[in-house]
Length: 250
Image 1 (cartoon, rainbow, N blue to C red):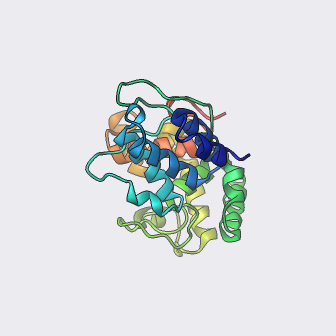
Image 2 (cartoon, rainbow, N blue to C red):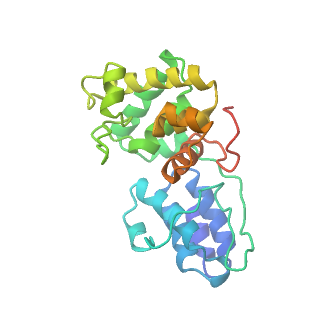
Image 3 (cartoon, rainbow, N blue to C red):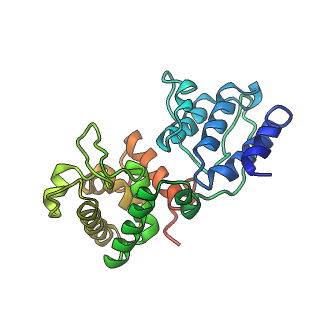
């Protein structure tokens, strides 16, 4: 029986164990699993409810394409940091099951369209050429656009690696929606950030989101909620434990 089906079978009798099974499915990039965790934390038994943790999982589900998650997302409360899947406290502060379920990039990609799989291959190949860790590069692509080469953010970040216009100019990207050129510019930028901050994925990903000057000014991850959550997403998508945010790549 799949982890998703095992979780569904235990939602009523043992919701904590259901979350553990859903975490296993979530580690393979299943947006339905994130949705079900979020729904349980939002509407489940009082002992495990946690609106902010629910929002974190529901937001992840929406980022990965689940449309049902928006029904349970509570805009009146913020998102808790997304730690290792299953970490958190319920109404009485009791922790639920804390399984070790790192995100599996290959399992995630196996669920994606052929177009996204081809983009992932391009990212990994470009990362190797520019001596950037391919797991970090792919994690940033998933966090930025979910492998969408036509994505445009409200801040006009463009393409699969979501390069803002200033970064495009800086690294010679003239066609941001040309996936090959966009990826090449991003790899050059990531290598440049590695030279600035060393092999520290926390500061590299923070700088990719907020700019290197913000990281230098604050001596690490800036105190911006968006950037802090972004760093945790990148670490998670890379297969690391975001609860151990000082950890360096494997």
